[in-house]
Image (cartoon, rainbow, N blue to C red):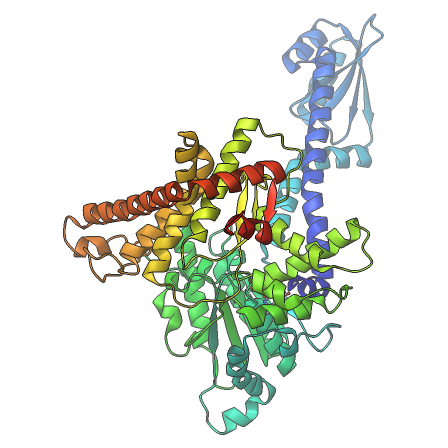
Length: 604
Ligand code: ADP
Ligand code: ZN
């Protein structure tokens, strides 16, 4: 994973951090312990301690035989007449006390006054104990500031010294993106040539894409290709407890980069600092300072600084526009989810160091994993390796990878969860409902597997075949998707005349699709082509008239009701198939593609 290199290059820093982290609680415990002992000793001594006024009175009354004091200490030892036990007293001032006692002695009082020379060790330890809380506090503050990163910041990965240099070869797919980045690589290789020519040099590139799509990877590969250091930091690391720290970190980061230039600065999750500067609550003011500092640094590059700042985000729409101005992140590259070919390549790359059995068909696995990110595909191969090891296979088999895909998509199979007969029947009809309805809808994908074995939080599942990547979805397809989503609930109602909570996720998904159809894709006949991103800008709706919210609600409800009715109609028309699929499920718990299709053959 991407983390590996960071870790390798920063083992020392990390180690120190961990040591510091471990020290903090230790110091706190020790302090509490020492204070406790001191307080307890004080309490134990209470009955042996004599108050100063009492002491004067006792001296007056001649009760005291001997007083022992140490120069420089205000604590004195007392011996009372006829008492064995030694007592203590604290005196306000040694000089005055000595005079007082000598005066009493002259007046015929037979007190013996022993003055001992200064005990260096005793006075020192007394001072230390009295200063201890302050010392501990200071140490703690220093440690916290250290951890907060007032010290060194920004992780450096140097392809020159790293054992596993990452280059474009390690990045599967993304061909267009890679060729776009080539320009930056060339620049980093020979910055002088560009500046000599007076060319305007690239500054910042914004990579947009879901987590795990390889943004860090491609940024690192640029560094690897150009053989320059890669300094990375996450936006969230700038946002810290102490106000003002973020800005100072940005400054430090760029200072460091200037020292090793030409180089790449990579800022992950830039939205954490670069969000729109809207409100002015505490955290935001902090972000403002950090963001401003970043802008200052980027604007302040001399024309001969060869630092490229690459930032990554999953939410480009959240970014402050100032960041996207010329001379800052003026280039945006979208990193999309990998398509089927990309997925196959990613699987190939990550199976390089794994032992695969001969039957492994990465192409078909790629076909089953539409919508997966590179990181998820990598994870699937790791899971497959674990499954293969547990099953004592000599290499990773195709089935192991398929199981890993299932494990990752629907959570672990829970064989030990006991389901009541009634729950089982309900789940069987629910899943059969999804599957049967889909079978009669042209745009819906073929069924790969139907199961009533609980996985994760789902009571059962219906798996579809996903063989092609789609870029556009038609209105009919969306409507039919809703019908198949609501097919589960419809089947429960028809077969058992009852409905369950099992459909709650289906309904949530359906609701979102229906809402997007109306508000994002402008697919509603009545409301017409309109598109608004209400999550980004909830006030958009007000521009379009007063009743729009009601109308959207009505339209969404119509779409959902329509889909639910169609699902019920379909299931009533094919009730025999519904019953057959459900009973087969109850019998076998899992039915595969062939078994499912068989039920629909004429003389089944
Ligand atoms: P992001 O920065 O977009 O969140 P990362 O770059 O950290 O994603 O990706 C995590 C891991 O997923 C990478 O280290 C790599 O192992 C794998 N990965 C993601 N995309 C690809 C790809 N296109 N080719 C090869 N591996 C990939
Ligand atoms: Zn369902």
